[in-house]
Amino acid sequence: MEGIREGRWALIDYGDFVVHIFLDSVREFYQFDRLWEAAPEIPIPEDR
Image: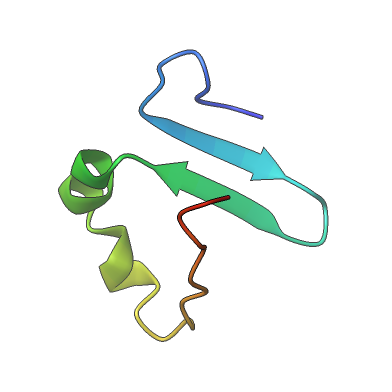
């Protein structure tokens, strides 16, 4: 796990896959969607 202390993003490495969680402002600043535009999006329900 990385980035938790800053509270703006988090990276969690599960070995077979990596999860990135960003605030919208960080995501827009680094334009991560441009890097992953071909990857499918997985919606997460608000109640989770």
